[in-house]
Amino acid sequence: MSSTLRGRRIAGLYFSGTELRDLLVAWLALGVAFTLFFVDGTAGLDRLLAAGVVPPLLVGLLTAGVAFLLHEIAHKVVAVRYDQVAEFRADNGMLFLAVMSSLLGFIFAAPGAVHHRGRLTPREHGHIALAGPVANLLLTLVFLPALLLGPVVGSPVITLIGSRGIAINVFLAAFNLIPYGPLDGKTVLDWSKGAWAGFFLVSVALTVGLVFVGGLGFGGPF
Image 1 (cartoon, rainbow, N blue to C red):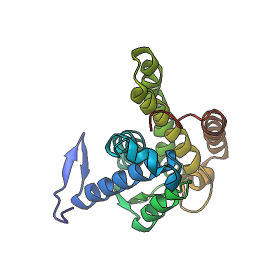
Image 2 (image 1 turned 30 degrees about the vertical axis):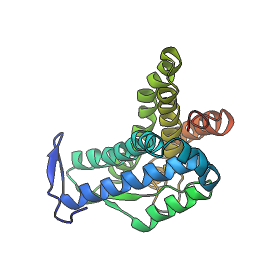
Image 3 (image 1 turned 120 degrees about the vertical axis):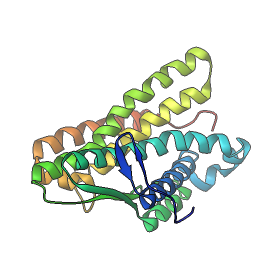
Image 4 (image 1 turned 90 degrees about the horizontal axis):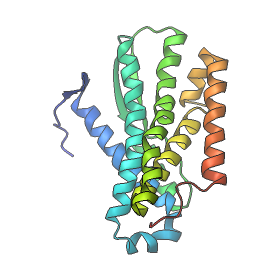
């Protein structure tokens, strides 16, 4: 990736060249990580190879990649609305950890963060932090039609896109709302315990019920 990638304005938001590069690197890394995770890491590499690698990776980029991108862009959108200078920066060490952990059959996804500067109230900080998980919860509604349409048209791949899109988004919402360290949950909790509890409990309930109990996102053609 060229370090001279030019900045550009997309949908009214300005993205610097460095920010676009970091978003692309993180999108690719998380697409790979979640692809490996859903085939059970190294234990499922034979399934991945049998599927030709490219189709599973494309599903990973379309589901995990989109979930990550819109999570971070939601942070940026709200920060800019509060007159902040806001840019995403990837954490290469955490991206490496995400890929390596997925090879072992689990995943730790903290690819970086939207950094912003300017004076903000705790409420504004909370809104910016909450925007990412809320975007993930809303994305479950975007992937739901694919989950329902797949069986109707007889397409396991469309069904898989829908199921993994929903599973990944509820997981990312729940994970990011953990009130620890640099995760969104701590900032939301510092602003409003009620808002944090409501969104966190919904996200955890969906993740446990759909993913860990229901197995949503696992299985399928690859």
